[in-house]
Length: 233
Image (cartoon, rainbow, N blue to C red):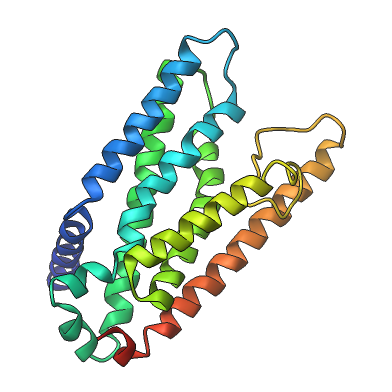
């Protein structure tokens, strides 16, 4: 048991070094800087921020934090000429890339949690775990979608362009679909006044189910694409 735990610890430590390698630190600095800028704007503005505004202030930094480790999950191995080794071991690519994806999501949740705690200190009292829980739905969906396009395009830069276009498309639609269950960026803390609360909770539930199903389909599709070894190497 101790030997297995030691191996697992070494694997996680090794993959953390890969995730933090190269340019991730710049994305993390940009995400924190953007969040602090928005926080300062809300701090010195006239209106009183609420959970709705905290949710919106965490969405974009969340995208920046998931952007690099998910899109460059495979590209980093290709650039360091480790891809041939990874794909030569049967089923190992599923374990290594899925592990990196899970580690990236856990790291994202921790950073969102820390930023939410800072929002309590600087702005307004919010339910920390509820905020992190709700905000991880759209972020996890976009992460799975980004990972899928990475396996389809087989180039991190090309997948990044596609994800920027998709993100802008969803962002533009978020206003017309403000309280619609098909809104990817549906803000559960922005409670509408024209519909009953029970209907609103049902809309949120259906939206989260849709995001979970979409995430599962995208992740399984990405794993299936990894079977086509020759397209990557």
